[in-house]
Amino acid sequence: MTEVDELRESALKEIKNTKDLNDLQRVRSEYLGRKGKVTFLLKKIREIPPEERKEFGRKVNQLKEEVEELIKEREKELKEREIEEELEKEWEDLTIPPFRPVGSLHPITLTLRRILRIFTAMGFTVREGPEVELESYNFDMLNIPPDHPAREMQDTFYINKEGYLLRTHTSPVQIRTMLEEKPPIQMVAPGKVYRRDDDPTHSPMFHQVEGLVVSEDASFPQMKYTIETFLKEFFQQDLPVRLRTSYFPFTEPSAEVDIGCVICGQKGCRVCKETGWLEVMGCGMVHPQVLENCGIDSDLYQGFAFGMGVERLAMLYYRIDNIKIFYENDLRFLRQF
Ligand code: DAH
Image (cartoon, rainbow, N blue to C red; front, top):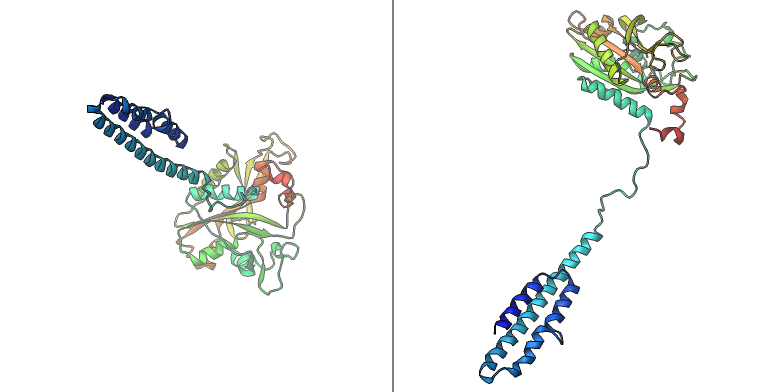
């Protein structure tokens, strides 16, 4: 009788611990097979003295039924588990796009994004304006008089709609912003601009980023600090930066911003034309007339503005000496970014 109880214990344990259907098959023949342990006990019934035989026989048969039942249950469990595992393995995420994008971002896009990231971190918002622009926003409102050289046909692409042109700079976004928003204003405007210009460092289409700050206390030192901070961050080095007096109709005073040549470290090279300095943007205090043109009281508010060429900055940063390479879409070039 203890043998039956012990066998029962070990069978329960083994069935419970089976890993898979194969394993269960092994346990089944171990207990119920022709030479199995339970079968062995069944055969032994005959040898038991008659007075105990009935009780023993009942117990062994009960054990056999119990083991069969447990194996059946376990089989069902293992089958279900196998199906689940199969499903898990075969599961496909149908929301994954069928083709992985194999492209990369264009160096101009990368440069634009880097410029905007630096300015937005300094609290600037991003503004955009149309490439087909009103002649008055591109010129008149910016204090560029009709006889200004920038208006001559060789610089500007006019379109055959009276009063419109392809913007020659991003400065008209200053006008659009000041007409729509009240100060304080602190914005940058990236975008494409167009000029009738074509040589190794000039392209008829290129990109600029414009900056405009208008507030009660915007000042020249603030402008210098903002531009210097940007340039050091952009070129990732503590560059020498200098402002040189210049002229733009829409700023007064105006300045040109130079950085120490990043190619030769100011020793003098072909890129800086042996001067050690590179011109990277224009800037100045917004001309009071421009503020007034936009309905901003120039007695209460002051502004500073700046404008830079994105290709120029990208060429210096990546050390590229021909602007055309940006537009040829030569994969041997593009893959390097
Ligand atoms: N718009 C000028 C250009 O295209 C660049 C520029 C100069 C923009 C001075 C400015 C500025 O905002 O203040 O050459």
